[in-house]
Structures are given as structure tokens and as C-alpha cells.
Length: 183
Image (cartoon, rainbow, N blue to C red; front, side, top):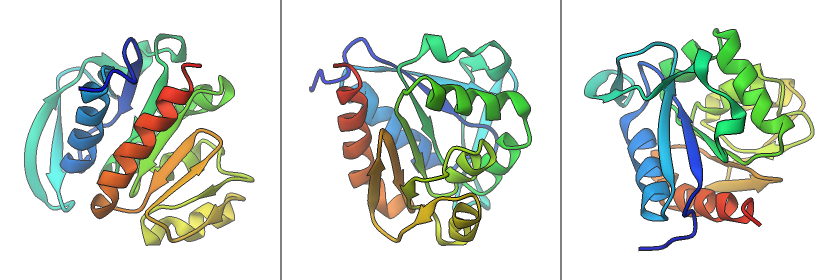
């Protein structure tokens, strides 16, 4: 087991509708690398994950509500996808401001699939190059970012990928970027 992220605390911002594999695999990658993860959500209780946006999957316990979350308590942030998940999150002012706080603090952020919708809402893509699910690319360009079609893109501590097929590369890249932030 790698210890690249030993002692590192990673927030995973997610709510009902999160794509299960995009929550589970990055979470497991951080934990395999020695880090700890905290699922941050809009409300206490559990969140309902989905498979392919339409099929109910497992539920996951919420560790912390977003209203009680502080960027100071974490070293990095993961934004999983699923269409409904980031759409709900971007309508919550506290969720949006938490994302902004990570960028203002210069802490690494990783977003996959529809996760970059929250980055657009937080107005943190301007001048950055990133990838996402194809339907978000116009939103990224309209928000001042450069959208590309690549498996994984790293831009100044921001790691992005397109879809669940990219998870192996996404997980490897986010562990590497989160580890660099330690130095």
C-alpha cells in the first residue's frame, strides 16, 4: 500500500444522484494511498448513488454537512459526477463557496464527468484548461475555460476527466496531484 497521502484529508462533495463508481473509486484510491476521506453533503443522513444516472445504486453515509465544512479542515477536494449530483450542488450557495474556498486557498481539486458543472458555477474555470462530459464543454467555454477531449487534464492543481471509463487515469492523477500539494 502506498503512503503518498498519509495524513492528508480529502473532502468528497456529493449529494443524491452521485454516480456511484465516480464516488467509490476516487475514495478508494485516496484511502489506498494512505489518505482519509470525508463525504460532505447538503444534509445529514445518507446520499443515494446512481448507476448511469437512472438506476438506484447504494447509499453512502454523510460524514459532514456542507454548512459545517471548512476548507481549513481539508487538503484536497473531489467532485464526482452523475448529472443530478452537481446540478443540485450548484444550486446551494454554501457548496459553491466551499469550492471557491479550495481554489482561493490553492488546494488541489479533482472533478470528473459532470462534476465540472460545479466549477463553472463557482466561476473558477476562467483561464484554465479542463475536460468533462461532452455536454458541459459549452458551459466551460462560456465560463472562460478551455474545454478539451482528453482522458485526464491537469491544470495548476485541477484534475479533470470525462467519464467513468477514465477513472483509472483520473485516480492516478488525483493521487499524484494531492501528494504534490504536501510539499
